[in-house]
Length: 81
Image 1 (cartoon, rainbow, N blue to C red):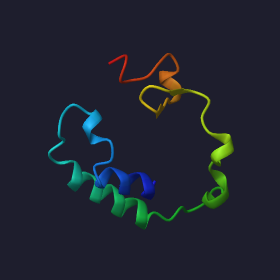
Image 2: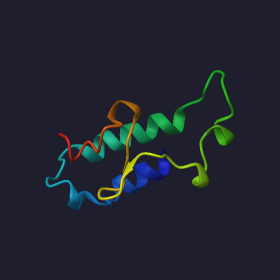
Image 3: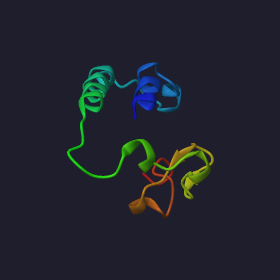
Image 4: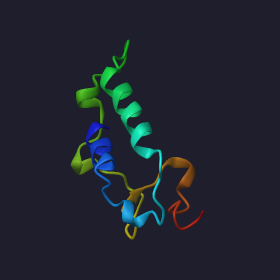
């Protein structure tokens, strides 16, 4: 989560958006602070609970390099807005 947020804060691939999100940096900093302060009360060990590189998502858009989530199995959200 923090690596993705750091990339977003560096404006990685923002040129593909087609617009400049004016308040994104502030929202990303708030999100970053929430993720850094998160302490799960219980549940699986988060260090081993996420899939590794060999277990990447089956569904992704090769054109946009975006992973799809369950409700969007029918296609990339950028193609089907």
